[in-house]
Structure formats: structure tokens, C-alpha cells
Amino acid sequence: MSLLVHTFVYGADGGYDLLEDPEHGRTLAGFESTRTRLWGSEALRALDARFFPLLDGDDLYVERDEIDDFLAECEAIRPYLDRLAGQGGYDPDYVAQRFDNIVAAALRAKAEGGGIVVW
Image (cartoon, rainbow, N blue to C red):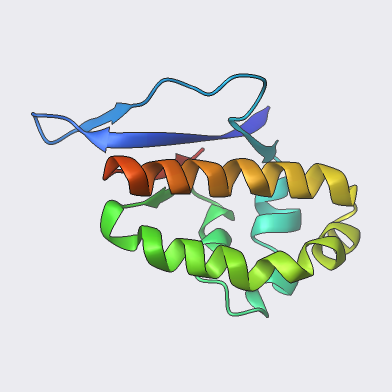
């Protein structure tokens, strides 16, 4: 199974409405195994990541009031992606592409006044 990232906005009923998916696999956030071997890894936790490790065992919801903090976390861990890929046993390009998909969804959420879900 694949881990996916989607951007959502808040509907009139207070629930989530997913925005239309971008083309060409831009919703891919990794394999199911990346929950523990990459995004929830000890190596990532050691970088003081607060959002990504939540994927180890659960889905990640980043609400609209957390988007700026999430994007700051993304920029803080970006320089370490190659090392994290190697420690998790993943190709660096694979990790960079999935990471960029997650960041793009968060930037879209910020522009739309919404949030993201990685599931």
C-alpha cells in the first residue's frame, strides 16, 4: 500500500473537503513502510521533528493553524534527506520526491487556508 498526502479545506459543515488531486503521482508520500523506516524513524526524531514521527502508527493531520510550523519543520529536515534515505534503506531521489509532494501539499494548504492529511 502507498502512503498518500492530500490537501483539505474546511467545509461549511465543519468537516474536511479534499481538494482535487494534482497530476502525475503528486499525492504519493511513500510506501506504508516509510511510516516507521523513514518518517517515524529514530534518525528523524533526533532532528527534533514533531509532525513526521506521528506517522509511526497513525495518520498525520496538519491543521491550518499548524501549517507554518509544519513547513518550518520541513525546511529544517530537508538538508538531512539523503542521510535519512540511506538510514531507512531508500533511494535518495525517491525520498526527495515524496518529501517534495508533502511540502507542495502544505504550501497549497497554506494558500487555500486549509491543512493536509498524510494517510
